[in-house]
Length: 119
Image (cartoon, rainbow, N blue to C red; front, top):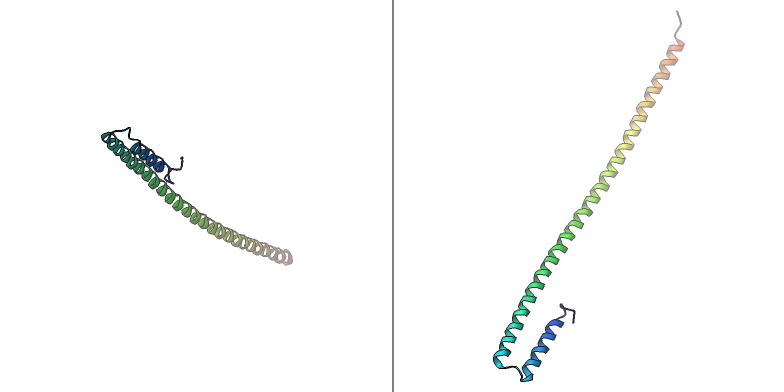
């Protein structure tokens, strides 16, 4: 009886109205009023649950969009991180190369200076 989506509440209400109709205890005017009331309650229930479904569907779509955006951002960050790592490695090799060249130049200068005749 708790499964609203499955129509259980509607089935219970219909059985109750059928019992009232068949009982012969309620006058025709009262039966009509009860049927009108049941119809109104059914419309209100339908309207309320429809609105809830729309909200849930909208929220689910928003969450899907957010998840997609996060996946895309994560991919972009991974790509940028890989680019930075490549750049750092390249700059490290460049600095090491420049440092080696300077060291070699200093050694060559020291050798030239050592071979120079002293006055």
